[in-house]
Image (cartoon, rainbow, N blue to C red; front, side, top):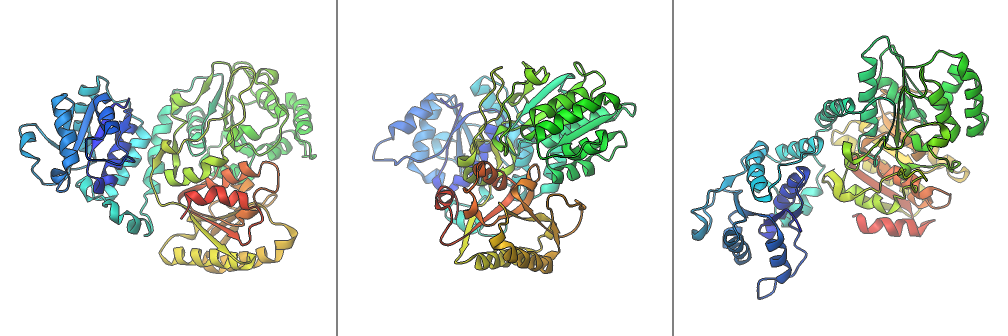
Length: 537
């Protein structure tokens, strides 16, 4: 049973969708999707949903006033005392509804009046997700902010989506910073774990928490991750002199003079044996916790001045785990996590990075690890309906050879740059470079460098995260990062190695606005492409 039923003319589907998203972001369940064929009598399923709902929002426009079905739904809602009439155009409603006070949605902020009316009918105040509401309001404003009637009608949606989408990533990130700074204050001290889906803002929350602790100059803060590229980003976001941001292997070398010996468990034990001689930290924060070896968690706890009571925050997403680690429980590594985890209470089941269309393509490849024996979950399954944004469906392109595939990708990127997209907003991801494709890959690099400059992020190399140019990196190196426009090439190579499905999931969920997927015909792993194709254009 939904809280709110939306009655609308099918040509105004986009307006109904935006309104439904806004109501959902304020904590109300909504029934509005018309997958049903309406026959000669009032459809039983629609009537059942309308009668079950606590409030019925009727969208009056020049089309719905002449719709037999909208008028029928509105008449039933009026008789049941559930109707909330809403004008989305300058139009008079049918005669029998003119005595009802009718609201008009002139801009995004007029939503508050509608929410008051919904709360009165439902009997519950809104439970607002600030980040999602802000994002939806930003999109609404970009559509004109005069009336949701200005949103495209159904027949024009396809043409609109073929145009380069308009986004305001800077303002969205600023809003995330502000809101997550407040959420970071809600995290208590001691050992804490945050579980969240890809794109839920775990890294943003971690950075906000680190800044809050580091505001006291007397405190030393350590921020660790697995990925070298993410470590570079964390250093740029946390320039404070009392904050150390690093990936674990570099920290082991710098802090304890222990070098990687190809066995992460052994590395951790070696660090642990030397850590007692080093100066400790007041707080340790871990990003990408799902990729840490069990012994590494013993190290981060031991690095605290007060190991059992110090601030230890771990961000974790089992769906992005790319390594076969020895199974362990939090208790076995000395971390008191029982009852101290966060997920839905910080809205970390919601996705703010990707559009719903991108998540629909990625969802089949999301496989969270099982929970541990202490009853703590290790990951959340991504839900495309929990995406805060809408956008174009991912695009699939293919070439008859690897060379032709690369040329197609280069041409699409050249077109984007020609449209004014900054090269730094474009990332080209790939699963791996085998010996057979080294020459093709080298030519690809040179062409990208000519198009817009190039930052090739690779394991073992130093680079400036703020450098200009198109980003080129494999999916392993892309973990924890995000880019407005992503080209995921050589996709047919996914499937040949263990954990390739998780690696593909990581690659797909790096895209904020647009995702282009390329492969070679005939495909090396056709099954992977078969799962992607229904969600792509």
